Length: 243
Image (cartoon, rainbow, N blue to C red):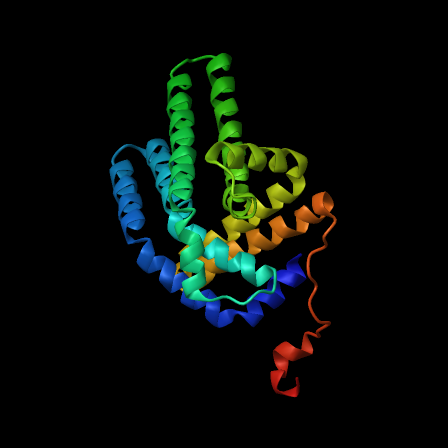
């Protein structure tokens, strides 16, 4: 999976940057909303500020502009030609469902966060245990959210069908899901530390990483293996003019 990701990313380096810039332009309203939530949370203490930041991040990342990146990555993984006009045409059919999925995810996270702060008021092991349970539920929401857009694109189902299928995939592929979530954290962390990296290719690379992970697990349900592409050597990275 990782080898496939590196080669596909290498073959589409220009596309990673271009589509990330398109995402940045499309995402301005969501970025503004996320910034407002983050700003509101800074005066509410560390815990509430962190919760507000997570909810804002979900609204930004689980949004129609991010779905546009998933549609492009879906075609790259399937070794299909990518044209912006065709992507936009396909994207329009999913916009409202993508937005509802983002609102639903952020809403569930918000409810869980409120429950955490509520249970923390109980000075007992019960309150601590219930708060910990809510944190596990939040982890589950993060894992399920990895599959929402890949499932939506491939299944073209309703919001409920997409959530249900994503949940089942998470349960049935827990180890891969945890690995993908860890990879997502690394991508977002590197992008945030590098500053502009998150807006100039890193987010598209993350979407490609998730798309390849999703495509690799589908093989056990469909019997169709992940395309390997032509046999290539790492020497091509060092001396590409020889190929």
